[in-house]
Amino acid sequence: MQRRTVGIFVFDDVEVLDFAGPYEVFSRTRLVPGLESRRSNEHAPFDVFTVAREREPVKATGGLRVIPDHSIASAPPIDILVIPGGFGTRRLLEDSGAVSWIKSAAETASTTTSVCTGALLLAKAGLLRGRQATTHWGALDLLSALDQTIRVERDRVYVDDVIVTSAGVAAGIEMAFYVVEKLCGAAVADETARYIEYPRRSG
Amino acid sequence: MQRRTVGIFVFDDVEVLDFAGPYEVFSRTRLVPGLESRRSNEHAPFDVFTVAREREPVKATGGLRVIPDHSIASAPPIDILVIPGGFGTRRLLEDSGAVSWIKSAAETASTTTSVCTGALLLAKAGLLRGRQATTHWGALDLLSALDQTIRVERDRVYVDDVIVTSAGVAAGIEMAFYVVEKLCGAAVADETARYIEYPRRSG
View (cartoon, each protein chain N blue to C red):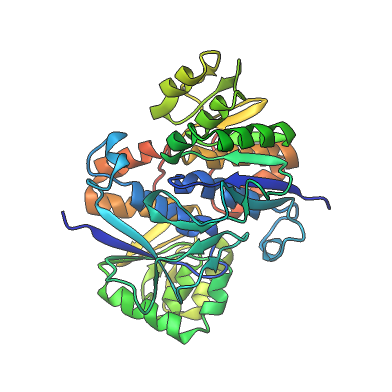
């Protein structure tokens, strides 16, 4: 089986659940149901890794320290790109190297997603131009200000308009299940939700 | 303000969302509502850190690498102890140093909690003797086998019987909000849930 790669961008002041929620969902998905299939990667449809600006550890919001698997310079090809949010996105909006990496990674990815204020980075990269999109409720106006062609959805858990954006923090879990369902079917997504005891809601 | 410390145990093969869910909830709780209060720790009632067997990085399920803040030998006093689960708990059941640290940390903590199969470690430490408790649905029988005096609750999101245990993985988020509500009130817990866009359910 050819696994799809899931590249999750991490950075200083990334919100913990923004990246950890999708990380959990994608990394625990199995095409064979049950407990046993979770003991190995044999039936895993996704190969999940973290990517940071550099190889150095990043400090997430609250102080959690994560060692990235790859730098943006050395990351393997990414099928599913996940751009989480957090206060660190504000600094990255001014980081042209990070923004252009996101733009080029999105061009080769089959699915590009954001959680929370990760949408701001997608907007800055021009990826949401003319599209429907959402973000954390506290950043809806900022998203609109970054690109006035974006049709900002103010009351959705996630929005799929070629690019898949989601609302704040925990909404990234829902978004990840939505992507799993799209790629692997509802049975696989629902069984994985049952495995991690997460009650899915609708978009 | 005297902050309560939240010590979250991490170890190889800890389930990502088991520790990241409570980490997110406790670290983003603020006594003053809104977006601005999240920009600093001024109104944070909790000081959250990770504790591992040793100071070396741990590799969570799926491969996420985390640098612990403290080893069990050097951890500061813990008010709220969080023992997450994951396949790594099976190895720790045979690790008398880890189990005895959990026992002693629980003795001085004001609140001891577990997520998922973290309950197995609490059971091994004798902390669930004669109590109601729960764990991941796939480990309910194992919990019972470890200590037959435990009244295993098979259909609860979390159970508070002096020790607060929760069901699998995502149930740790609910459990953390329950503890926040108990210590800081429902308004603070609900506002934090709104901040991280998490729809709370009931225990």
